[in-house]
Length: 114
Length: 115
Image 1 (cartoon, each protein chain N blue to C red):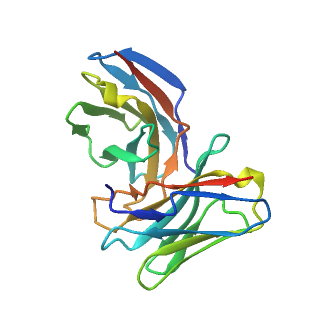
Image 2 (image 1 turned 90 degrees about the horizontal axis):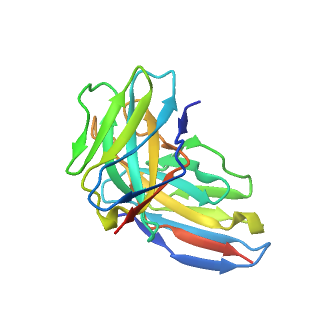
């Protein structure tokens, strides 16, 4: 168990809908990262938050948004869903640990858009 | 931008043998970290081993070791005495700087351990 909790584990929805994925980082970790894993795109970095502030943005679509709350949990919102958004969405967390940097991943949310 | 290349989409090896997975990367950074992650059929991403670029000594974790060649920008993973539980996708990943940065992943190598 990595200590990073993602809910739900599975999500089935229809095109055009909106969903929210939730992530609780490891205790003490200030950074949260979101990744998308699909067959055609591989593991793609979406966005990073550090202590509530957006720190880095990757290949995140405009239909997607995220935020990190004061308790450090994060949510990834996906709207106007398309078939191609079907993927495994990972959350990871880390803390600035001066030479011991590691990212710990949650078990992912499998999103199926039908 | 950093890129990570894994040129072996699939590999297989007999149980108890040694296998080496290749990874090359491209960066203009001087300070960075390199990682190998394992993704078994459960799809959990599990950290196998990490290497700091400023350390010349190759990292080892039990049966797992790396061959880090900074000048060649090469970072291979050696698995000794392979076990059935090693069957998984293996991803090489790059993190620039001294931490708190995103990971850039390679496309992965699917490793199958044959009984």
